[in-house]
Amino acid sequence: MRKQSIQDKLICTFNEVRYDIFEPILLNVARLRFGKKYNKDNDNPLISITIPTYDRGQLLIDRTLPSILCQSHKNFEVIIVGDCSPIETVKILKKVTDPRVKFINLSKQTNYPDDPKLRWFISGVDPSNYALKLAKGKWITYFDDDDIMKPNFLEQLLGFALEGNYEFVAGLYEEEQNGFVKTKGQENNEQLEFGGHSTWLYRSYLKFFRYNVNSWRKSYNCPQDIDMQLRMRKAGVRMKCFNKVVSYVRPRPGLNTIGLSARLDIKKN
Image (cartoon, rainbow, N blue to C red):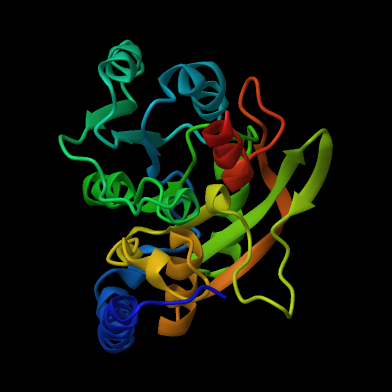
């Protein structure tokens, strides 16, 4: 459990009160306005895939985008938002010609804490929130800029959500660390969140839930995705885990680890 400063405690308390009051109200209003539009009869909705990035343009081109563009569900848009990305990344991503892929580069970078671990907790938070503003799909999914979608990622998650009338679903993912592969994301009694960030699919009327740029200040459940999923659950969103692997998390070229471990390894070297 992370030790908080007085400033951290004040900001977290303010946010918690604000979220507890307003997010359940906004959810009920959104359901009244848009809930009837979600039924099994619409089997080909537009899905918005949001991807924050900084300097992984080539990895996006080589690994992530090919896995997205070969999806069995074809009606989607990909919104890539750069966190004030360097010019090399901009040049690479501007070469993508598929009309379903859009790239926008923010002029100002997210205000990150100096500690690399805390920085990782909110990596790409401003681009992610900006992408939500641009999303036109009936459904939204988040995806990391170095992960891999299974070819039926969108089709399976959408079918599962429609069948159960769920507002938010997340699947399992296959993770590789130091040569060992594990399946992760299962529901259990020890933690309320489930799935992986790059396995989410949810109704677009939930996009008033924004990533919390101050989640790193919390004493626990600091990562932005965990913070947001738990707020959804607390507000009363209908959520369910899809117990099949839908994405792969692999080390980036030249590394043996992923996530925070990879970031710390890069910093040491």
